[in-house]
Structure formats: C-alpha cells, structure tokens
Length: 190
Image (cartoon, rainbow, N blue to C red; front, side, top):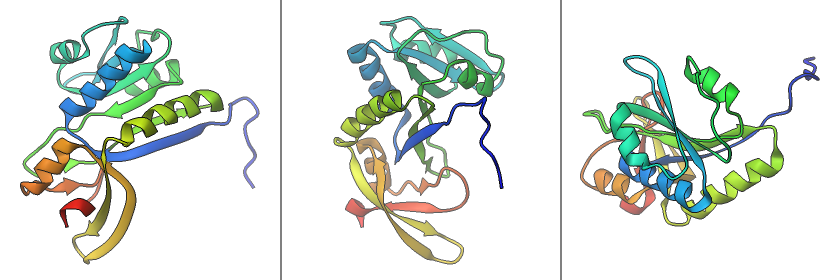
C-alpha cells in the first residue's frame, strides 16, 4: 500500500484535449492575458531551453516571434519566478499556471494538444477550468480516435478543435494524437 506524502500537497488537475493552430492558441492566451490581467511566460525547448516572462500588457504574439520556436505558454495570476534552467523547474517554481503546448503543423499533420493545469489549490483550479470551459463553447466538439494499425475506432465526445484545425482536416491534413500513431476524425467532418 502506498501512503500519501504529508509534505507534498495533494495535486488536482484538469485538461481540455484539442487540436488547434498555434496562431489560434496564441490569440486565445493573449486575449485572456489582456482581459483578466494575467502574466504570460513563453518557453522554447530547442535548440536550447529558454523562457521569457512577459510583463503585464505585453504583446504576446510579438514576444513569441522573438523567441521562436516557442512550444509552451503558461498563464499565471502573479508574476513568474524567473531563472529556471529547464521546463520542469519552470513549472515547479511557478505553480498554479494554465499551460498550453503549441504544436506546429508538419508534413505528417497536426498533433493534439491540451489546455491544462495542475495545482494544490482547488479554488484556483476551478477558476482556470471555468475560463477554459467558456472558451470551449466557441470550439468544435467531438471526434473519433482511430488506431491505424488494427482499425480500432473509439468515440471521444470531449475532444475539441478550433476552426483552423477544422479547416486543415477538411483539406486532408491528418489530425494526430499527442503521442503515438492514432489519428482523429472530427464528428462534424464525417
């Protein structure tokens, strides 16, 4: 039997899985930052790790353009603690964030991503979840997950996608799982 560690807070989490274009996800994050006075951090993982904590009111798209290739955005109610040497340390030093992984469109297709948060503060997590739920109202919803090797097919009613991902899929671009070989077919395109 595994006992809970009394020195670590219980972590709660949520995730909204989706397919979305980088530009659309950046626009969503920038809109939230402006509307709710949130701080934004942009992370680049390659060729070396770098993180830029943006001041309130910064032009998010412009800051990302200066740090490319940015792969993850984090939003936070307070300023970010800077000086992290890698992505794990960044999240440990800056808990209570909402994170968005930005996937590029490649010749293979567009990988799934998620709007996620993990924290010990239940009220804070509920606030992030409410923000994400509201944004989800403007997205397309529902997909089939397909395992290509064996042809397995499963309904995923809570998988979302943006209009840009919808248009790409309608044009024949593969919608890929976050990892592995599964693909997605959106309900409203089948």
